[in-house]
Length: 356
Image (cartoon, rainbow, N blue to C red; front, side, top):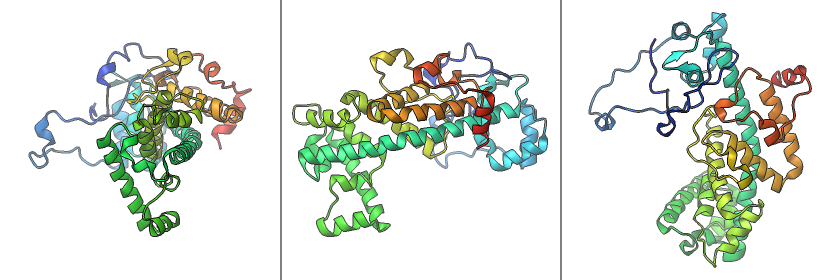
């Protein structure tokens, strides 16, 4: 079997996570796969210093044969070919790492089981994207409102309000790049403010900034008597304390970007871990379950009437793939109770959702 080491990533701090791998309907699920490309030494990173013989190009038919040689059961080779014409082999590769143990694919691992994980992951990313969207819009709104209310329209440029002048300066440079890009694209709001005032006020610039830039500026606000009321007001809009909101925003920003770039969310080591409320501390981990708890808590405090519908939709997504284990995402057995997700009343209900 050809070993694809550039895709089999293991977080070095969590090498023992797969000591006991939960079983699924077919094969074994490993709960710590994370992609990471690496080279053997520092010299290998010097461009032009050596020549690497890359793996040869494989036609779709050859890719299908390689799947079979790897140990993945493909009962319908034509169906496998059609799949690989739609989904890059290398992208799909990340999902069958879940079924690897000591470099070997678990026996009786079918391609359909891998595809189910892939489809569940895609559906969860869509759910997450929709869930994070109102949070992102509200954080832009709250940051612009309270900062400009307390310190004026150009407060985001005042380095005295932020704890690290060097990082603040770097953020301003990147924000100016976003402004320049918006001007080049003839964004009406940007062009109007630049022509009339020469700059963008807080309430305009937040519509140009990335979520990461907004989150970083909030995280950099000084924690002193001058800026503490503003930080508290921004966090209070979500019913949280500033340290908690800052942590959650940085985490959700990473999740949002992953979803935007169609990255794998299932069975991933989350590098930016959110702080957990005291009542949720037992669910803290470097896996994905805390993401759903954070979103639930934000909706409970901000839009309580909307969480029930979102929880029902989340349940439909998961119920549509009953053979996919949630253990690799850190979900406990009682995940429905924790997130307030009702069970599907019948199998046909979940099947109907999956066919949408």
